[in-house]
Amino acid sequence: MFTAEGDLWRVDARGGLAQRLTSHLGMESHAAFSPDGKLLAFSAQYEGSDEVYTMPAEGGLPTRRTFEGRAAMVAGWTPDGRILYTTRQFSTLPDWQLAAIDLRSGESKLLPLSQASDGVFEPANKTLFFTRFPFQGSSTKRYQGGTIQHLWKFTEGQAEAVPLTEDYPGTSKEPMWWKSRVYFVSDRDGTMNLWSMNPDGADLQQVTKHKGWDVKSPSLSDGRIVYQLGADLHLYDLSARSDRVVPITLSSDFDQEREKWLKKPAEYLTTAHLAPDGERVVLTARGQVFVAPAGQGRLVEATHEAGVRYRAATFLPDGKSLVALSDAAGELEFFRVPANGVGKPEQLTSDGKVFRFGPVVSPDGKWLAYGDKNWELWLFSLE
Image 1 (cartoon, rainbow, N blue to C red):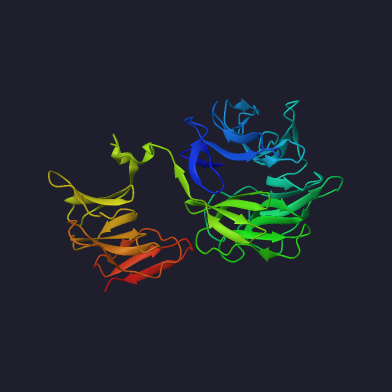
Image 2 (image 1 turned 90 degrees about the vertical axis):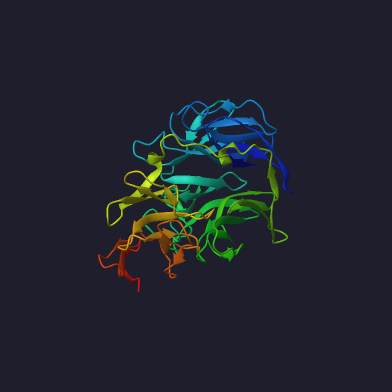
């Protein structure tokens, strides 16, 4: 089960043509099968805000399970058949907490844990392994800030929860349970990968060793973990220690990929900069660069590469060239772009490691000054 185009889809673990299960205009996500495989719990926006719903595993009419009016995101199921979900409904502060819904009585019971954003029970249903702190909101690599996510465990009858991954200053999250080991996602080697450990946090072992793309949204069942890597779904068999891509075909008209006219393109404008003589203006919108005349004249499409995004285009003092940030080389680098749209952009820098901000050109056209997300100020000689 996975989310694509905002809807839920189902496909065989071997891959193939996926079946669309939902079609609502809102988002359906965080799907999880019940322990007996008969029900599917998920979060959806049928009546506005994200609420918890269930439907038959093969598809059908959804049944609403929460009525909180705030985001309620499915985290999984308990071994005894309750839906585990995260919510801020029971907190007077912006604090995510875990709750469980009994489908027979409809009662939601709050777990006695603050700042718990997801979790999994071991089979005896007595010990919960959970992530403390929700996702902090940015996609910063190797985040080590004040809301870093760590794994904890809480056993029924104990006075307090116990931290398991406090020895590492980076992210450890999304715990899963299989054969007396906790599997989870961590960026301990620089990229989010699958790891495992004993229930007490000892015997740490790395499961996958991807570089670049992060492992996201893992889910474990019967000794297999499915997870997202880039635009693909992977299936990892824990017993065979084998990893493979699940080949999926979507039976969709891909309406979001069709060309469309924008009635107010200025709403998508990100930067604008006047030419030295004031006769033209360079515009950056939707990742592309255009040069427009102040009066009558030709609108120039200065960049043409498909799949390449430009940022913060600026005129150089000669009026013939532009300088802009581009991800064409993999990292954000500065490129010189012909203002008349004739010719290919010329790469100026090749040392990008962090996000860079737009340039300021010196009056004599010899230097670029720019800052980056490390809060460093740089000068680059165009000569």
